[in-house]
Length: 453
Image (tube, rainbow, N blue to C red):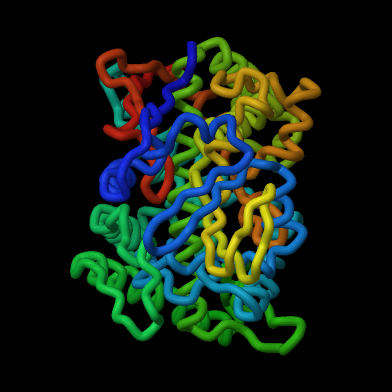
């Protein structure tokens, strides 16, 4: 059985037809040849774009010369009302300063400190599925979204999702997602910086409400820090960390920007990955039983401990394979800052350089059986090699996701806890089909039935 994969477009199309397809789904708008190509060029009247699957080019852009390939500002235009000048959208010295302040909060020792909050969120997720475990169809993305939001609020602000402010942010964020267009004009037309960016009224309104709630949380935390009674969580760590080069700390507006991206990236991507992991385990019940047996052997009936994570190897490889098949962020866009030459093609300054985890992770010249679900592949030579050279669900190089280590604890932990308690099965009349908007989600949701184990 092959897990669901969106169909590719079958022929060359006009720009306007491509934009229509792109608006519906980024992935099915692309031709099938990208699963074999080392590089592809895409031309529009406004810019040229180069999709790079050659691992050497990917390393050049992300690891060897990242300053020469800054993050494209066009793709992030639609997110500006919410994200402001967060670390997700900045470049150059601004971005480097932000990372110097943020990164210490996600070092290995801090992951151990946040682990109890993750466990509490996992226990909440297990309990919320109890009333739904009657065999009836359940839209599982809504449940994983709730769980991921709970993790973010507990680890960042020491607040459960049931907290009034946390719950309001979660609801407003869901509303914001529904207003966000897939296709933003600025992503295709290079507009001068002085040209106003037009966003939907609802997009601006929900972003304003989310940022106001986050500002209240941030201001309250700054007051707690000043009073010496702040909890030792991620928000406190980030807000009390000074830039080692300048001695400066984040201001309240700067912290609001960062919290917005933590919620967008940490919540949205984790929810997507966990939902697909549960769907894959429902499709492949033998692997589900392996995860359940491992969880029972390692954790028994007690609450998970941080030391358990190194022993949850099956859960880790299942989650790793899920990120390969359904990377939450399917494409990343950089911009050439100077003239380049890629595979004997001239690349002009300003050209868009697209790096696609979706295509790289399924590349037919790199991976054995690229469309198969096989968590055991990471014990093979091909799997180990591709893990080093053709696997980047969190990007790579200096701009690697600062929460990558966090996600690789959170994902396997929640997966093991949920499968230890519940059995998940597919719903025949509601098959899932991936579609890429902000992240890779189910076109009509991901539906599973749940029963006690």
